[in-house]
Structures are given as C-alpha cells and as structure tokens.
Amino acid sequence: MFKKIIIILLAASMLFAYTGCSSGEPTGDGFSGAVIVDGSGTVYPLMAHLAEEYMTTQESGVSVQVGRAGSSAGFKKFIPGETDFSNASRKIKDSEVELLKEQGLELGTDVLEFKLALDGLTMVISKDNTWATEMTAEEIISMYVSGTYKADDAVLWSDIRAGWPTEEIKFYGPNENHGTYEFFYEKILDEQPMVATASLQQEYSTLVDLVSNDKNAIAFFGFGYYVSNQDILQAVSVDFGEGPVTPTLETIGEDLPYAAFTRPVFTYLNAHYAKEKPQVLDYAKFMVSPEGATNLAGINGFAPLPADVYAGYAAQLDAIQ
Image: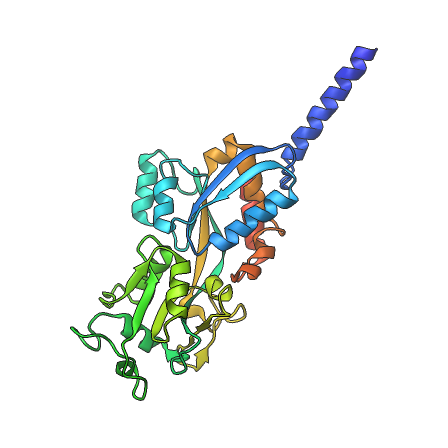
C-alpha cells in the first residue's frame, strides 16, 4: 500500500510539472541555464530591462545575457547558431535570409520574427543649440546628403537656413553595424551618399557625449536613447509638412504625426533552441506577455504594439513542443 501511494504521488507530481510547463504562461520555476541575446543597440535598453525583470520576478536559475553589437553584427552571430535571439532595429535582409537557408533554417518556421515595439528615429542636438530646435524633414535630409550645399567644403548651419550661424555642422550617427544607420540611409536618405564629414560611431554613449558637448553637433538615433539622456540633449521637432512634430510616445506610430520617422523594432528567435532549451522558450513567453513588452516598452522609450499582436506571438510560442 505504501509503495502504491508513493507511485500515485510521483505520477501526480509529474503531471503537475508537465501541465505547468505547457500552460502557455511563463513560469521560470525550475529552469536553469542561459539565454543568449545580441544585436541592436537601439533595442538593447528594452531587452536588457526585459531580462532584468524576468530574472527578478520569475525566481528561476536562468541567466539572460544581452549584448548590443548592432543589428547586422547580431545576425552574424545568430545565423550560425551562436545566440538564441537576435535583436534588430530593422527587418532581416533578404541576403541574411539566404544565409539562414544555407544553415538549413527557414524564416517563419525555424526562425520566428517578433515585432517588439515602435521606435521614433530622433534627431538630437546640444542643449546649447538655440537655433535648430525645429527643422523640416527636407532640411534634415539635405544636410546629411553629400554635396547638396558644398561639394568640397564643410557644411555650415547658414547653408541650411538663412540667419543660422556661419559655423560648421558636426554630423554624427551610429555606424554600419547598426540597423538605425541602415534605416536612416535607406529609408530617410533614400540611399543617397551621406555627407563625407559625418562621424559614425559604434557606441551610442559616445554619440551622446559628442553631441551634448558641442553646440554645432547633430546626430540621429532611437527615441529611447534620447529619453534616457534628455537632461543633456534636446530633440529636434520635425516638420513633415503640417507643422513641427516633437517625437513622443503620443506622436510615434505608423499612423501618427511622427510616422515618417517611425519604424518597428524586432527580435528573432531560433525556434529549434526554443524546443531544445526550456529556459529559452520560457523567456520568449515572458517577453510577449502583458508583464513583458507591453508593460516595459513605454518605460524604455518605445511605443507598445496592440495587445492582440503580442497575443498572436504568444499563441505561436504555445505551439512549440
């Protein structure tokens, strides 16, 4: 009789554990190991906050490690299988999809794409800059395009608008490793050559320092980085044709006034790793849960997506066995 009781209790505990892991809700309990994330520097603050919240609230032994090599550099690690997730501030390119296929991976089945939130590309200037607080979209594009004003000489603020200082503009931005650079170059500049004097940096913290300490500097990066540094930077309000629009969580959106400079940000999941490593799947479920991106996007300077979008991603993850 004693043996029968033990067997029944063991079977019940196994059934409870199985249903707990298959309920579609992130539990964290009993999981251990690591979750490896790398990629976009723009997405980094949001993903790092998600990782911190997961490790704090889920009471698991999982270590979520988040890097910020840049979107392109992140895919170079993700495609050969070095990471579980790859963050990107732009969609995966066709050339990268082809490299996935060479690894035997298909986008949509072996690799899942999750749109995490919406970001507003933000033009930032020093607090000491008193003249360029409002610019038209055409002025921003023209000033960053090589040769529009002076083919061989430095571009001056007075070249952009009469009455502005006759001082050289110091152009900055993230380098080619970052999806933000690609978005700006491909979507905003329409692949026109960028001004030759632009200094492109790997680290966003470097950009913040360079711009905040130079009244003649201007740079572009994600709204979240501006929000976390708005004590030393100011955002340029952009006129898209109907008056200046300041990037905020209320104006950033695909159908909102800042739409022309709005873009989605993504993370990509290796579905095979989600099947093989319970901690990876559990973290993915937390990421798209109401406690995850919905709750933390706005805190980190991103506009969250509608709840049904995250719910659809949760259903995809529930289907992984």
